Length: 337
Image (cartoon, rainbow, N blue to C red):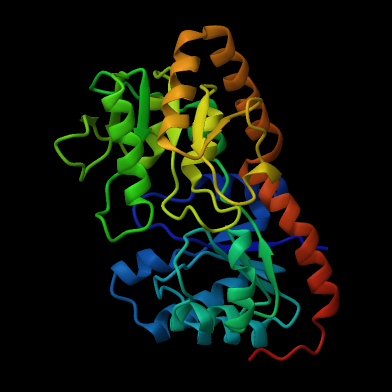
């Protein structure tokens, strides 16, 4: 049985509140400890210091499960994970890869090999992580923060007018995956005369930028629109969704989402979202929604209900806990690589 958990997540700009609240809500405050390796890095801690502190925090808490989120940050050395497993042989160590890249970096591969379980946010890259040396890989999509994304707290009033149709996201440049699809969609809506705008930086003069917001403020923007547009950075990877999709669905506004492989496993076109493949389909779908408030309300409510029932961090943690308990039963004598 898993009782005590150590969290070591990415807190580069803002704490991972959704994850932490879910763990505390499930296991209880006293059973959840937090170690912040990125903050220690900002304070100048070396690999050796972070390793000692990380292992020390787990041992002091007598952790049954260490949940890491390191991505490509280098914040926790693989040697620290190996050290933890030696110090606490019964502790399961997992890491969550919510970000997505086209390959597994050498650092991330070393983390995969050191952990018992690798959790990734796309189904299409499971084999890639196994090939990188992960002993176990599981699909675990990004989820929403209950307070910020579902309850909309704290409330934020955008200092700009939110158009009828909105996309939240920056333009990372032509060489970054997804940029072509995003620009294509924006230009199609503008060219069709739709009241459309983007909230984000880096866009060209032919796309109306109405303002900027932080990630945790997106929900406040979506709730003020009539229709929300969602387009991933990586649109060819099976069942990869950025948190934008679920945050948008949680707003209760209808989401028009670019089709990605496997999306039908999670969303139902015309029921809880609207899927499109071409700019022409996008414009047609958006116009139909703008002309039919009843349809907007119906699809928006169904999208929010889907997130409430399946896509919060509480759901993700509970689902992974079952796998972690099975792993814990079988790791006696397992030697970290």
